[in-house]
Image 1 (cartoon, rainbow, N blue to C red):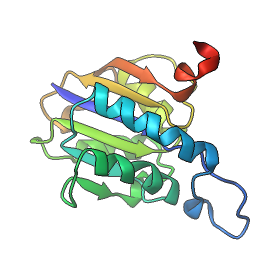
Image 2: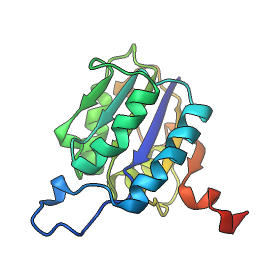
Image 3: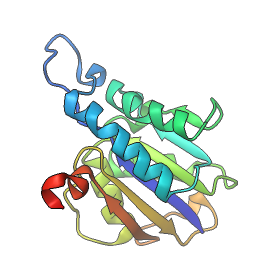
Length: 168
C-alpha cells in the first residue's frame, strides 16, 4: 500500500507581463492560502518520504514552506522539471520511476495534470481542482511501477473554500 498526495500550486499572479509562465510567482491570495494549506496537510497527513515539485516559481513557493514544515532535506525534497505542465502520461512515468522504499509521496504540480491524474487513479470523473487544493489517495500497489488506472482510493479532497468563513 502506497500513499500519494497531489497538490495544485497556490494561486499565481498574472501581473508580471515580462515573466514567462514558468517564472510567475504567487499572488496575494495564493500567499494567503498557504498557511491554511500547510496546517491542514501537516495535521491530516504523515511526513512524506518524498516531495516532488515541478520547478516553476509558483510550485517552488507552494512546496518550500511545506518542505520546511515537514523538515525535509535535499534527498527528500526534489525538483523535477518534467512535472511542469505535465501530461497524464508524463506524471504516470514520473511516479512509476520512484523508489519502492518510498511509501508516501507528495507531488506539487499544475492543472490539468493534477485533475487528470486524480481521475485516472481513482477511476472517477475529472473534478474542479482549484489552486491550493490537495487530494490524498491510498494506492493498492506495492511498487510505484505497478501504478495503473483505478489503483487509488481517494481519501481526502481539500481546498481553501471548504474552510472559508462564508461556508461556516
